[in-house]
Length: 119
Image (cartoon, rainbow, N blue to C red; front, side, top):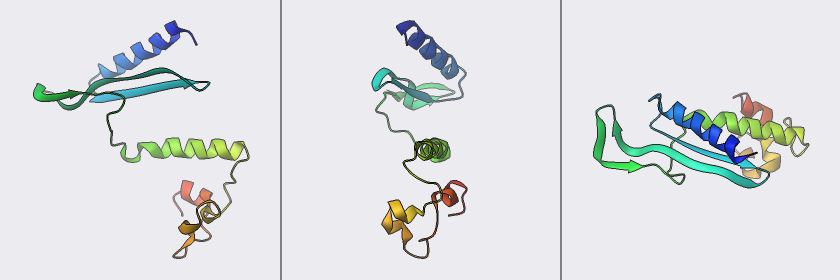
């Protein structure tokens, strides 16, 4: 991936930020084990429709962000990749990989059950 392509990606992220829908965006692009882009744009606090407050803090890639349920889709994708590679089986009980999960009647709950919100 060329530097020009990386910059084009960052310009797209800047455009997305300028819509005003997001208080901050942190983006990390890795390829073949190397970090090609690791930046943030926006404010961790102190940015409002009325303008910047005195205590405004610029976001960095290390700024903690509350994702709520947004990480569920990423987790599901990674689990499916592990399944495709044969490293796990969706029909295995979760307790096969995490024994302590099997307490209190959850011994037979499978990875598939968790992904489909039935575990």
